[in-house]
Amino acid sequence: GEQVEQLPSILRVQEGSSASINCTYENSASNYFPWYKQEPGENPKLIIDIRSNMERKQTQGLIVLLDKKAKRFSLHITDTQPGDSAMYFCAASADSGTYQRFGTGTKLQVVP
Amino acid sequence: DMKVTQMPRYLIKRMGENVLLECGQDMSHETMYWYRQDPGLGLQLIYISYDVDSNSEGDIPKGYRVSRKKREHFSLILDSAKTNQTSVYFCASRPGQGNSDYTFGSGTRLLVI
Image 1 (cartoon, each protein chain N blue to C red):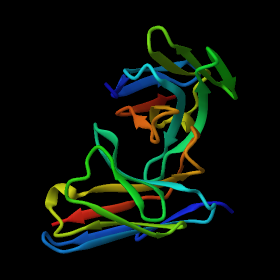
Image 2: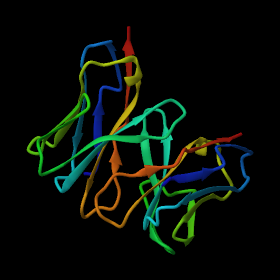
Image 3: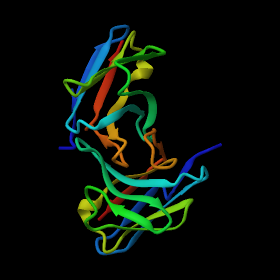
Image 4: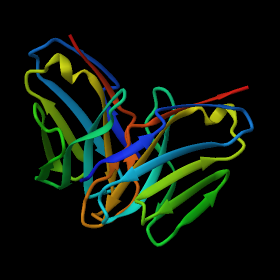
């Protein structure tokens, strides 16, 4: 099992509120979990990542939580702004593996 | 400025034609990847290259092959393109074989008609 599940596929939130995206993974050896943001017509760009030696990481309005027992990790965007509207992808990889497996993406829409 | 460069950005081909997608990076990264992105499916791995002439199939290699003759250059080849290969193709790289984030190219939007 190597799949990464990501939900929801579409998320619509009010400007100023929080947005949460959840991912689960199957490979218990996974120890690196990056999050990418993709603007329309652009390439994915890393916005935050977390390794398995941490349970929480925060940077510039982004919070990532990791629950290794449940094989679940999540991205929380606080005080969302229109500029946060984009596709977001989670990914997971293990030291023993050489590539990241991606979730299917979440389209976030922040409305005024 | 460290980056991954993909050429071309847009490409239209007829079914049965050969397609060459090019990717270059200036960071001396050992590991390079080709992914395709389709709505609702996310990014699916086609091929990995660990270094020059050291390539492995990813999850969906059928219909594709790759070439890496120089560390900074990784090509994706479609021999006799099919309409279901219409997609956005992303090249990515990262240093060594350790666990770190990718640097993505800007993508090639391929339409096979």
